[in-house]
Image (cartoon, rainbow, N blue to C red; front, side, top):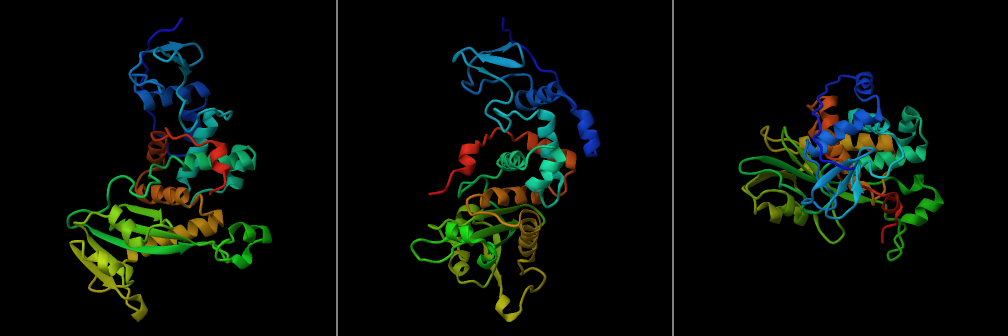
Length: 324
């Protein structure tokens, strides 16, 4: 017999990984907490949001309109996983608390799982960092009077350090060269948030910039020609000429905030992940931006933010699929 239920509220705070483990020691406590976060006492069917929902045995629910059963993990990061939720919670804490990320090898040792499992868990969590992959993703940066720095960088390892099999994999069949570089556009509001996006092959930096930066912004760039025309569409456009050794002028004209962000991104990739494919680059950028934008939050609050954004499932099949 199934019946409607209400979910009890759960509050918690912790300052260390030991306190996290004590706060979520069992599968049931983790389930109760996820139900609070996802539904807050009003269970909604992932199959039909308008349907009446009944509670059944074993933490399951039934959607009246579709007749399908589901639980709090359905259509989320944790969907169809054999890993216990306390292990998942610990993985989320470790990934969000480490300032430059954590490798799958290190995560596998910390969680006592295989490297392959840790790699998949890492990607599943990375898939939920909350910044859209779309070219025009979410709210535009900047606004009236807001200073926004814009620049591009190139990410990619040296071909001479790659194995022969890897060189063949990245070889451009049309041009006959090794194409392993990814162009990344960075946008940062001074003393605020940052956004980084892969520049698509069919779109230039200035087009991507127009889609992501409010036209009322005061933008700062280097002297690259790509920004000269588009800069006229904004409230003000300031530049610095790196070719002349100019990196700051009058204390206002500079892109040092963004250059610092690119430096931190390099440390994450070089120091922790070593290499990132073009296919997964945007997810790693999202991970970096999540950390940067939540840098003033506690590890506990960052953990809570992550748990509140888990309704984005990644399957292993789509993860390993080759790009066309």
